[in-house]
Amino acid sequence: MDMDRTIHEQVVEDLYTEALALADEARAVFDLREDARQGIVSDQVRMAVSVEGLRTTTRVMHSLAWLLNQRAYHAGELTKLQMLRHGSLGEERPSDPDNMELLEPATRALIRDTERLHERIKRLDEEQRQIGEASDPVRDMQGRIAAAFAGS
Image 1 (tube, one colour):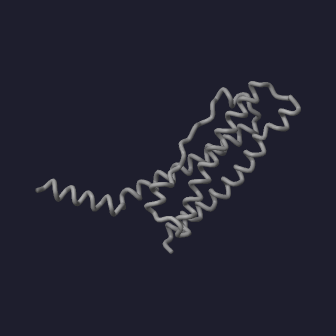
Image 2 (cartoon, helix red, strand yellow):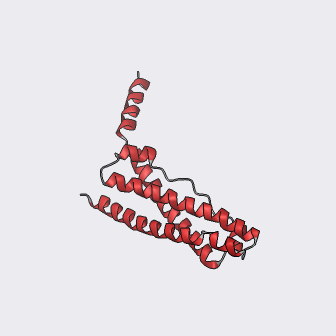
Image 3 (cartoon, one colour):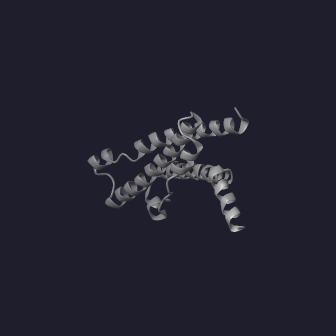
């Protein structure tokens, strides 16, 4: 097994562990049922928690989906081409500063942690796609064919 792949696999596993922990924390933090029963939060705060909770859980789920695709690739369940075509990272929707002001410091910290996780994965995804595009044999062949016909 080549060293770069081993390092990449370890990074993926570490990020996967972090993403699972953040998903569990997000589930606990953004569960509004207890607060709603007690009526202790304003509608504005409840809306901010709801919106940022949706953004946060979506961000974490996109991260987990990307990491699961990476794990499937390393396990031989996906080809590199399948992973590059269908394993893209979901679009990031950053938190709203106005909503963030209404949230508890621990909730804001969790949201920032998920944003940092998504950003790290985004960098890995972009690097992987650049490498994948540079070494795509089909694209290389298409380029050679186009060049051959252009010279005719």
